[in-house]
Image (cartoon, rainbow over all chains, first blue to last red; front, side):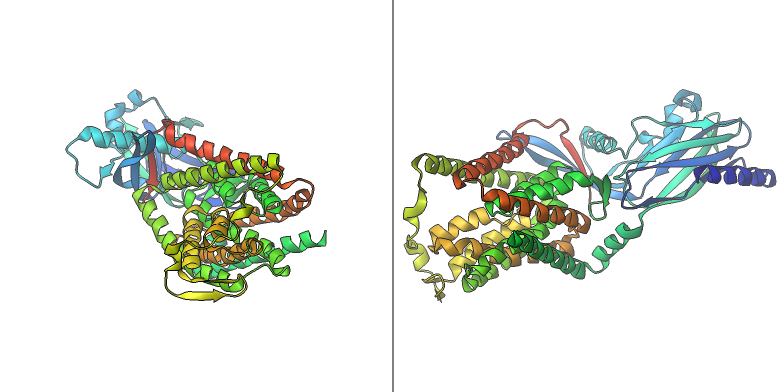
Length: 247
Length: 304
């Protein structure tokens, strides 16, 4: 399937490459959905692209933005529990990026950050204004460590690999706990530290099949769903008793 | 084999969940307990969000208590009237428990409160059980038999709404059993346990109910309280995971059968010592987490 998709894409992209001469960057995902079914244990996500002319390529993939609460445990009377918290607005639930060259060859960290590439480019907006920037900074670093531990933020950038001079591929990984929703994929062509072209495509991460139906049922008709679960439990309890009695 | 849980939104190994269900079912077969005190912490250890663990466990309790109650029902050991009064208190308790749970979640204290409550309850019950079973093991008699005919304390006697309970041969204020049920309801909603280990002694020592009726009657009310809590968790918090529930319950049915046959071959005192050690192990595990400096002090949750 993957091979076929890639082959089709190559054929397609060279055709469009010939047509759209003014386009300097073209990208597409091998599959623009991530389907979470019963056996989902994580999934690779492959992006192909073609660039025209010189320059480096950066790809950023970003999940839907949510408000997140970060809490810090502190010790009181020998016990460790959450004492202080800070809420950040519009934090992407998933973030990863790939680069075709080391950071300094792509114009340096500052240039990448300005163009919205890399973890440093994410602006974490605390919901409360604080006098002490170090306070917010600690919570922000805590958030990034938490997300990295869950595999939802990268520890280091992935690689964009060139299959020939112009045709490239970037592979990302979505772990089994990947949040559902609409994801955005941005690809940048960077020439001399400046963005020459940006392409955007969307990706849908969602539950499918039986899992999706249960999830929808639980949300849309939560009362019926609850009663059904309880009825099932009663039936199982009755069955357990019958089995025991027969012995 | 891995399976994706649609409500918890994560992947878990089928075998571990099924084994946990079997083990809990086994315990309920041997000791006649719901086993929620073991299942809920284990689900949380496995990384299942505490809210989903508690919500789904409430549902599992319906199965365990229904099966247990049937056996007592057949022998006529259920005081339906007493059970219904307790249930009235239990429904109120579990409703309030749902809101307390949600509030603690917003405040970010739910994990801490669940752990603290478990440590306190399990520690107390485990030590009492160990003490009692060692005692009976050496003296070859039960320690508490002399308390059975204890009367209500003057405070409880003075309460209004007196009611006759012919089956239990009691004339007491309905507020006392309703209050005990209320505590049980709180425990179902907040901790995901039926609370039989607290209700049973309370019914014997506070209400003065005949020992024979206690287990069946407490299971009778736990069915309704936990069913109510499960539906409320599904409606108010969306934290009842059907796939997780099916795995736990089907494991439970098999475990209960094995447990029932084992229960005929081991003596009560031995069984209680094993159970006490098990309870204290879970207690220590949970307690250690509260006192040892965590490797990561920060934690992040998505605000719903």
